[in-house]
Length: 502
Image (cartoon, rainbow, N blue to C red):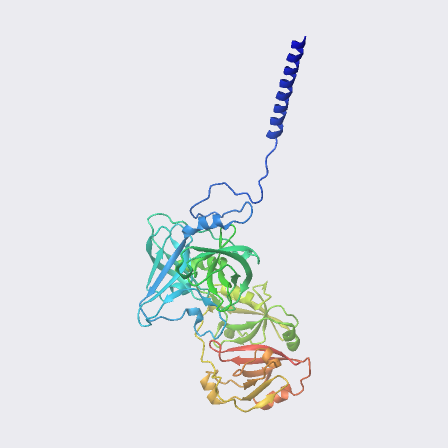
């Protein structure tokens, strides 16, 4: 009896253990562990650049991005036979805190060969490479070094100084790894990005930062839309890619601040993509051109000119002989649309016109003295920017003239000697600004010594007496619109400045 009891107990224990084990298997099989947020993705890493983006499945890691795109990033060595010269977009730029290009040049012997280094990235398997115009500008020989150690001679396909973009090509026996292009228009401030380049000859350096501003104007306010980033970049990064977290190129690194640290600028990749067909086909970019100088309308300008709207681009000057002049466009015209498409700001109008081919016709919808008009304009080709004109000698004695403390200006009559020296258009009438009082209303409105004052509130200023008459009744809070000629700008330009009496 005792033997049977022990046997029964043993069987019961074994049966219970078996049932518990089976239940445990069932429960465990129905559960899937959730990976921690910091878990490492164990999927194989692509080791060559292809046309597909790297899609992040968790926290951003630029290690995979860098490993995948590094083979598409190249070192560029540009050599010229002649005397060194300054990068094209910096010639004559009178700004003490201007951004600088990255290219590192060896020009100790100014009479001998000039050598510069930069970066580029392959955009297709056939060997097309994007870089900066200033990297290869004036180069007689362009050599490209790949990550596998090969040095290939590159052919210049085309370049565009206005946007600082260049396209070159190398011939390779095998398809090259290339970087996918993203959509820079979808960028947001604060988004993570990384830069790959060859700063100070340290090849394939990877740095990470964020997009700190979008649409920065640096050299040409009509075309510039630079992406600003704090990703560390230095001389030699010129032409290298700025890459988003998906592994797509969204910019071409082009400039750095000359005084601040870790402030860099990149050309949006969409701007490059838009001109690639022209660079491939004709080697340069032809843009539509009207020949007008524009500005936005602020509240003070709208009030002083009695404008019915602040939306649009206000014409400040019309270049003689330009398409705009031939079509009858005039100063003070407010352009509100092109071919029925509304424009809110002057840079929108410029971008619309620049995107069209020379020889085509654009119909401008504008307001002139409150009346709506349609003006068809046959576009010509936008000219290249010229070097800056001679600037005024700050050491010359200040001539005597009428001092207008209301606005903070001293003016003198316009003489023939001044007109000849600064190449003023024939028949120009006005008075010359001889002094601007510090912290005065005119000072705050960016009026400078040497500007020629043409009109005040659309009334001509032909003499000191005219200036005195038009400003005599000024009271605190009044707004004056000054139409000035600025000889220091390329080719000389007219501009509108609003001065608010305080």
